[in-house]
Length: 266
Image 1 (cartoon, one colour):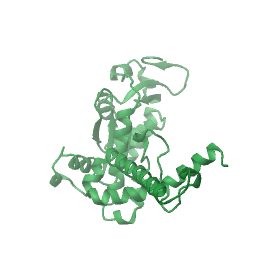
Image 2 (tube, helix red, strand yellow; image 1 turned 180 degrees about the horizontal axis):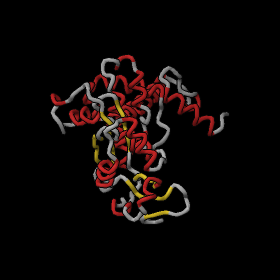
Image 3 (cartoon, one colour; image 1 turned 180 degrees about the vertical axis):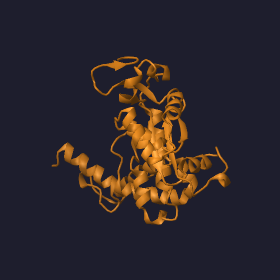
Image 4 (cartoon, one colour; image 1 turned 120 degrees about the vertical axis):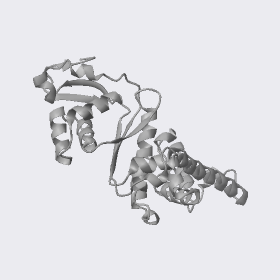
């Protein structure tokens, strides 16, 4: 007789693979057509629940391609990526990558980036709370050491860099902007943040994505600014910092020498 762990593994495998027959010990006392039909109903319910979870996690993607197409590609995705956690807001973490490689979605090449933006928004909503620091806290740092400051981003901060107008496309799909105003030739970088109760999605100015990405990677302000200037020569550090602080993007700061810190909690 199979152990409990073996039975559970076989049961889970059969749920996720329609061509796999149900384990015989699951259909006790005696395998038969009626028991198999009941198991198939349960198996279908699991698939539908996963597809519905993706729909809830990616409403803008569904709006862009329509319900029928979305459910069809979600079913294919489910065949390759089963939920690994009962917490379904984690499900579909690589759905954007899947869509980018999904042949039927080649006519909508921006779809994967819109999905990445939606997942960043979902993660921001469920992120830990933290009190954002103010730009005045940066003023406590000696002027000759500002470029060596390392900022800690707020737990909710997400960044999506795209060669497509990802913020505008998301806004159009949610009714926040008119679809006819979307410039498909314009690349956009998206900031996602939830400093309070509401998740915000903001398009970053030129150089902003490179700067924030470097900060999120642990670079000092000086190094991050250098990378941003390489990305776009018009980058102005003080303007970008002011905007990011205003949105509540940072939760702490310290010197990259690790000798001492500045601001709250240092």
